[in-house]
Each structure stands twice: as C-alpha cells, then as structure tokens.
Length: 68
Image 1: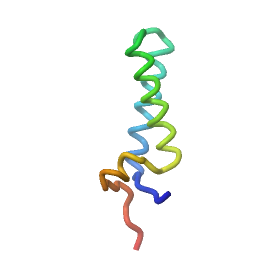
Image 2: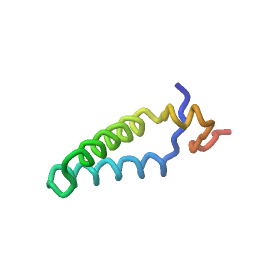
Image 3: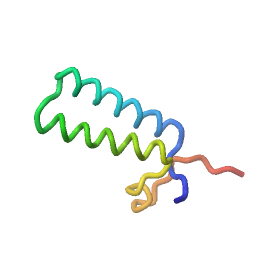
Image 4: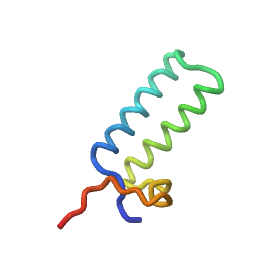
C-alpha cells in the first residue's frame, strides 16, 4: 500500500473520530445515527493510522506530499 494521506488529512480524521466517540459515549448522539457515526469514525481512525485510504486510491486522490 502506497501512502496517500497527508499530515493535515490524518489530523482531521483523528479529530473527527475523537469528537464522534465523545459524543456517542456521553449519549449526545444516540440510536442508529450514533452507531453509523461511530463506525465511520472508526474507519477514519484506522485509515489515518495506516496512512492509506482505499477510497482515495480509487478516486486517484493523494494528499501526501511528494518527497524529492
């Protein structure tokens, strides 16, 4: 897997996952919407730690700076 996530993209994904988790576990967001957001947050967190997003690969997006 070739890295395709930049630092800012990773930080945004991690922050989103943390905020969604806090909202879910403090019962601010509940029900089906809460579970869906928690799953999306988990996927974003996993992709940020792997530095690879399969959707970015399919769409040809690369936010990782090119090293020269």
